[in-house]
Amino acid sequence: MADDDEPEEEEPAVELGEGPTVEGAPLARVASRLTWPQEKSKVLDKEGDATIRTPDGPQELSEVLSEIGVTYFDRRQTFVDAVEDVIGRGSVRTAE
Image 1 (cartoon, helix red, strand yellow):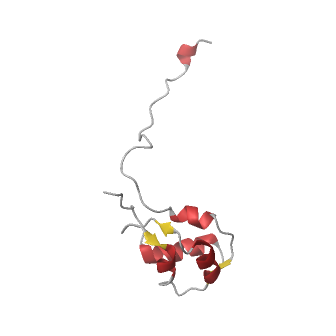
Image 2: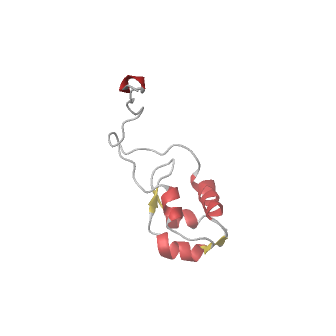
């Protein structure tokens, strides 16, 4: 068959690598570096100095965890939900 039957490749809808930067690491990346279950104190020891992206701008994970009353995260989603309850869910602010 001829190559004419194949559809043309389209450009991506969003070009990556350009535009304003976003400070901090995605919460999912920080959560993926840990194994579960995990005590809050161990999360602080391992990732407490990490800066995470939030809808209100970058925040230290240790500051966010200080507002969480849970001391034990039985699974990754429990951790993510608890952090998102504090920081909110939604778009993250870009650097200006």
